[in-house]
Length: 268
Ligand SMILES: Cc1cc2nc3c(=O)[nH]c(=O)nc-3n(C[C@H](O)[C@H](O)[C@H](O)COP(=O)(O)OP(=O)(O)OC[C@H]3O[C@@H](n4cnc5c(N)ncnc54)[C@H](O)[C@@H]3O)c2cc1C
Image (cartoon, rainbow, N blue to C red; front, side):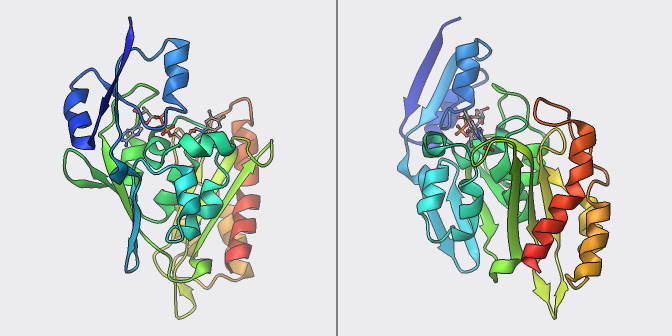
């Protein structure tokens, strides 16, 4: 079957043009591989609306257009707390094309940016209307060429203090290899205790997901050595990481606690 690409000036027009059989193209770093391999065929739809790449801050919140690239994130002062995340995604060519929207639906072991968004409690504005937690959208995603709801933008809070947000990625090839695992934590403190703990993992399941074991241990506690040790012990609870060419299920479970401990010590 032939592949056709349709370009629209706005995301709303692109959404209408998608119909039942179109596939939306973000930066194409994942999708075009599918096209080249023959797995994605038919109509591909894209939008050139410059608003899709806008990043803006209002009060404690941040709004990131779904078409913002990792390079756009790195150029944004408002999104500074996300620079360590964007910097760890691919090399410069990939970062110039890879979008925030596409990262939500990129298959394992990708999705490092989605890990950071899930940890921060981000929500996705859908073109069809409504807002949904990123965590939910990512859980429901299909494979390359699947047709998830079209995301217009992401809304998330900005951390009030630098140590409230942390991100760590483990890869075999440095600095730009794909993830053995990635990990983000959102640990706001009130009176010295963590209130509203969120921990998210990448490459530790079929999609980026919350770390319930670590969250249970950390909530309401001071981030001291004893709490960090208990969180590290609970790190892999409920996680079923896949085995792939980078690491086995056993290895990923074994090292989860070590890396969680390193991240938490940085955030203490
Ligand atoms: C060499 C290389 C290295 C890479 N390294 C990393 C890495 O280190 N970490 C990492 O996380 N990823 C990595 N990736 C994967 C990829 O580049 C990123 O995940 C990127 O963010 C995907 O975004 P994209 O815009 O290119 O997605 P696309 O390829 O355009 O799309 C991917 C999927 O998302 C859907 N989609 C895109 N935008 C939207 C939207 N707004 N709403 C709904 N659906 C949408 C598409 O329909 C498609 O199903 C790498 C890729 C390559 C080729």
